[in-house]
Length: 137
Image 1 (cartoon, rainbow, N blue to C red):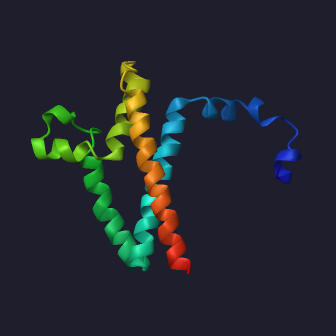
Image 2: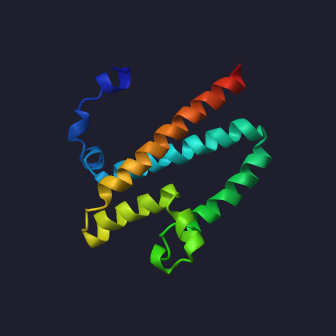
């Protein structure tokens, strides 16, 4: 164990804020989303190689991802072409799962949401690892 954890006088599971976070499925979803988008950003960064290009492309991708998810409008109200795009958007699945956890209480789609997000995150982590390792060679 790292020294700062060994020397910590209180077990980490007894700290109220930590205890709440690691057992909260919403927090775990946010961590999974962060891993997904961090890996995606690392893939882009390995291709673009300059900060200015990365910031421009990142902003150009962020807004369509947000508006193409079900964060603002239900998928059923979107045009058919946007519905198909939104089915591939990881943010759609995170919003769907968080909405079920926090608002509706309908947990029937949560396993599918977590499975899709986990697969996408796993693929992006592998792609980011490959692209960064090629960049470093």
